[in-house]
Length: 161
Image (cartoon, rainbow, N blue to C red):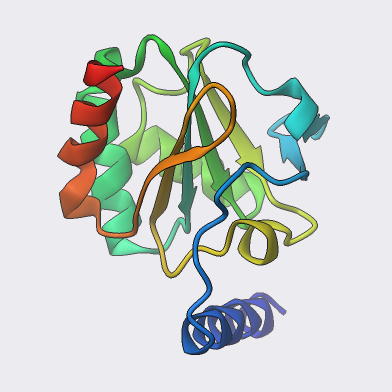
């Protein structure tokens, strides 16, 4: 079943890329779930802060590098609300975060979310894993990238705001 779901996700990514959709210019409505299975909607986003979303897959090498980089620079995000979103199950997410994001898990400004309804791809229009979106406090897109090597660009934008 998991392989079928992964194939479906890949097909959706391919179809998104073929129609060249742009990343969501503003934060759309969504309903994700915290690791304790409680609902988390766009209405619960931090107000008055930059909003940084990272869409990742626990088996993606590039995602591992992105989260590891963020784990090493977590203090740079102190004034930013960070949302880490995955379509993977909680158990795989826990293992991934324990290995690559140990410093991130207990931070009050970082929320780990599960996309159990498979909404993220359709609503945010990422191109591939990892997809990183930085939004202004008024929920407008400032910067999008899907190359973990460009992570420092996000740090520069965050520091300049």
